[in-house]
Amino acid sequence: MSSNYADQRYRQGSLPGSAPLAMAYVPMQTSAAPAYEAEDALLRGTLFPGLDLPFMGLVNRDLPSTPLAEMMAIDFVVDELELYLDTHAEDEEAFALYQTMLSLQKEARERYARRCGPILQSDMLGMDSYAWLSGPWPWEYCQRKEK
Amino acid sequence: MFVYEKKLQYPVKIQTPNPALAKFIISQYGGPDGELGASMRYLSQRYSMPYPELKGLLTDIGTEELGHLEMVAAVVHQLTREMTPEEIKKAGLDTYFVDHTAGVYPSAASGFPWTAASMQVKGDVIADLNEDLAAEQKARVTYDNILRLSDDPDVNNVMRYLREREIVHYQRFGEALRKTLDRLDEKNYYFMNPAFDR
Image (cartoon, rainbow over all chains, first blue to last red; front, side, top):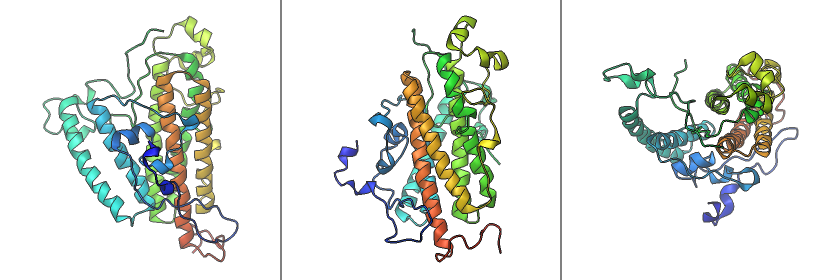
């Protein structure tokens, strides 16, 4: 994936030219670009190729193509951008991307709640029964592969 | 106020129950560098953070860590489903089982119960952010070690995801420290504690 980015500067951040002693300095990430597509971001655990530093070079593949995984990917990009914006509140391009993702998130959540049930209890507005207790809970999984 | 979202941050679907793996993965639930300590550390430190970007970051990362706590619990829960007493003994999970059955209890792999002694709230922005940087590295190494011990692909997917989040959080805490320095006296960053001294 990272070989698609011929220019490796996204791996570098900015440091002061010189700085007071007795302090730790982590380079500032200088941009929210380049960024992975949402599904790749969730699989790799980060939106940002410059922060994608896997153990022994192994990365996750094959996100299930379910409505839930699709929503998780969009939610993940929103979460990741929020952490970035907490330390880069002045980055207008990142904030514009955040706005786009929030709007995608709203659509994805409404679609998911209608098809599969509520994520938030407030998703039950207009539903005809208390669907909060229906369906599996997030930690449950019953399918089994024989040893 | 917190609101529960009825979903995980990343899918957890363990196809093969394996109590031997649960025996050490429980450490990321309630061990010294686990997700319970991480969430409590950040969500408690935020009250003495002097600047909005720090209050925001500690709140957001602390909240994400609660989501990771739930993911680790899901892994342990799924690894320990449908166990027989023979499988429990063979896996060495009997010392856990006798106290907790197949419940999810916050303890280290050694069995030591979760303790706030493995985290700190110093009430000083430089000290607390340096602790947070170290905490992310220690959690990253714990996931490295789990990946060395586990050969279950479904478990390892989740561990690789959580490990990468530690690296992203490390970067953000480092940036938060840089933003803090911009607000302090560069002739002497240790002149006073901006959360306490007026």
